Image (tube, rainbow, N blue to C red; front, top):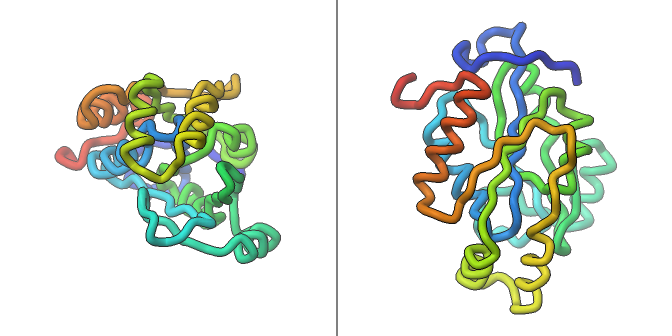
Length: 203
């Protein structure tokens, strides 16, 4: 996929400009979905990519398309995903339709796995990574509060929380140890500086 850097001021209406994919990463419990929701609410003309996940539909956390493992594998064979990966016993897919949005000039944001970033970087030119961090104490408290993991699973997720981001990528990092609104404001400012996006209040 051949792309060129574009400005969000033209709102995706300039066919000569191509959007960038913002891959949001961070350990389990860091609050990626909440940060993404806040960023999308504050930035205009930013498309939130809806993932395909082999997770029961009622578990929440984000809006996603729930499918069976068999259906997911069929979709993967049929090249329905631009990028897909497995983590914690589940399969996750970024729909291939995102490439059309990017080619059309729209910037997109999606929840990613750190382990899938090199594959994503090979698929999407000018990939931008938004890395959300938090202390082990914060992560442990949030994982326990959401009640989806056993104590052993929480321990394993905390062990994996220190997994590094591959070198050679454009990475913006924000801490989510404090108030969510502060994290979102920092992320928005960083993205505005990187991409020239305007806030919804200014649009």
